[in-house]
Image (cartoon, rainbow, N blue to C red; front, side, top):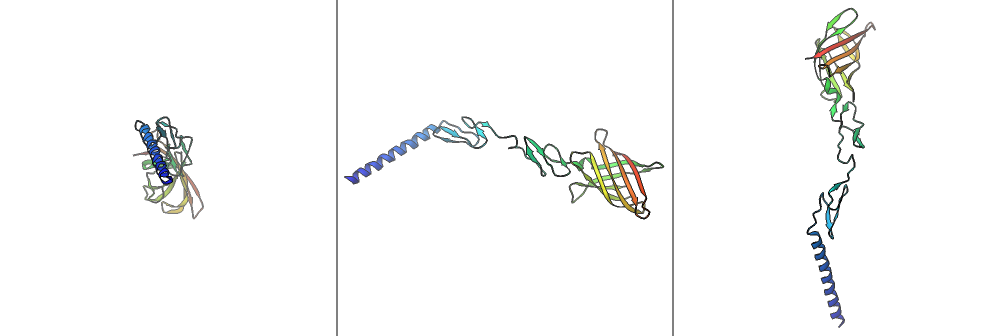
Length: 205
């Protein structure tokens, strides 16, 4: 008798469980959960970032879908802290690149103007550097700066007209005026210690 009782109890439990599963399935048949939501007893269980009856409402934060490049980080929907020499809404633009061009111009001093044409090109191994080559086949480098129209020429060894020394200075670009380039270069003669200052003005080809 006890054996029969346990068999009937188990059978009843199976029927009840089966009915509940059938009811849950029936409740979800007409429910279409969106954005990765899953139906449970006729109700959508939404993933993080979504809400609403069918998970149709996005509640993601301003930085959830924003990708900041080159070391930048998102704060309230804006990218900050771009790596040195990168700029733009997503830190996607190399500030050096606005200078990449060939320029025809002059070095100006108080007593003479010297034709001085330069080509500014990318440095192969350094994203922030630009290689500056003049019409005397001399080369030196400049560094781009984030959010700036300035190309800095750090002090470095240089040979100008067969005279060895150091060069430094900076270039500024006026992108609103036909890519006009302005700058100041300082040259120190290594042998005599004399300092020479040159202003530069050139226009892109």
